[in-house]
Image 1 (spheres, rainbow, N blue to C red):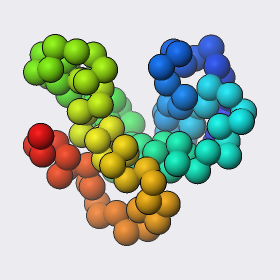
Image 2 (image 1 turned 120 degrees about the vertical axis):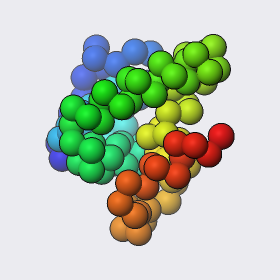
Image 3 (image 1 turned 90 degrees about the horizontal axis):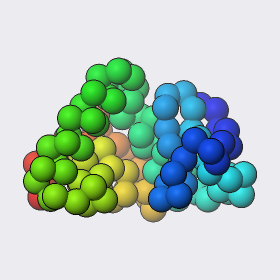
Image 4 (image 1 turned 45 degrees about the vertical axis):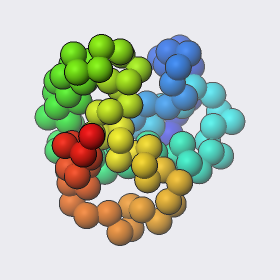
Amino acid sequence: MFIITASRLLSKNFNGLTIFPFIILKEAGLKSDKTLLNHEKIHIRQQIELLWLPFFIWYGVEFLVRWIQFKNKQEAYRNISFEREAYACENDLQYLNKRKLWGFWKYLFDN
């Protein structure tokens, strides 16, 4: 895993983005944000489990389904199963030590 700073790659609404093996942060000061890093590390694990390309295909398709479902981009984003897992568990810094394989699965249908 490599942590880099690239503010121009991220929209104003996002502080971080993960594309295995990189965590891209909007600004260098965020490297000390343990919650944000844990959130992004959860995405690293998800991408490893599904492999890189299938993860992003699934992410994109689920975003479109959620956008149709909620008719709101932000709400669609927040309800993608990968994001739901990451947001729900980002404060638990031990989560990745106890996380089960495909931990995002329980967030897929739990609406």
